[in-house]
Length: 432
Image (tube, rainbow, N blue to C red):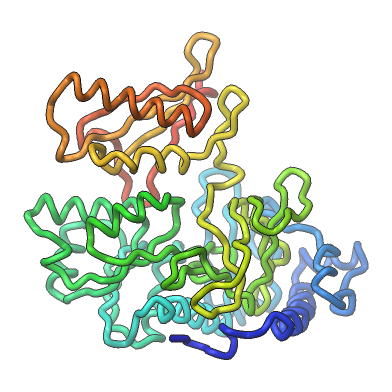
């Protein structure tokens, strides 16, 4: 089933024509901003510079640093009195990033999210509960708009207060929820601790997850615990928020909505395109943004285009599950490591719980990695078994990351938890 059949199944030639037309329009809109106006004047670029999609490379990359350096409104392409929404990142140092929206931008965003939700079977008969924060975080309002456009009964529960979340799910017969992966597991654990089986005692059937990298193993664990189908979502505030890409029922990659963005994948070092199917950094160009177009924005997210066509019939490109972020990569003894590689191994052990923490620290003259992971409910207090389990986890981690970490199994509930995105890495190597 399609929300917009014609555009979701558009031919490659028709899509290319549409993207060229929209790209020219986006450049014309972007040059109204202080930032792009000066940039285009310096390099001699305008709408007529684009004759094919290959001409996209004429446009310099835009980075998060550019947004921060032109804080707050250097990227505004319409007068502020025509902007009706502002979202901002939660940067802890320096200027945050600011994204502006017009009414047209919000309408397009709602349609994007509705398209995503409809694709995975959400309908106006569903009760949708959002466990994400509202306010400056785009995950709350983005899904709220999409669910309302679909006609769902919406429950804007917001983040935290797990007991209230559970009560709403059971009392309102919630069928669909949106949650970050780490919180979905916490919610499942809370149900079981309270003596409920969410597979039998709730009406839940669909989970929409995103906002933090997660492995296929973690997704399967979430589905098993809650008795739902969990669909991966990708979005970022610079591109509106959730809805940029979404899994279809085939669950074989996330469809990028190419009538809203042009996607490239580049080598983050050379900045050159990588061959189709190879891993690289995702770069996005907005095509319909009115208040604040962004051109060739470096997301820092690492993924790849999945070759071939999808069995669902949609023709928009698919990207693979994110490997991590180029700026989240850990370098230990010259080896590049991503947290999701470690999670993938940990989630394969049924004896383990769902919370873990990676600590990097300098011991003597050497940098070392400590992986602390909570034990699950089923584990018995058997010292010899604990030793064997620790040894096996260490062995599999070494095979995956090519280094030998120190593994420490700890009691359930002993590691810190966060209401927002889970903190998975502590790098103490620069702390005196």
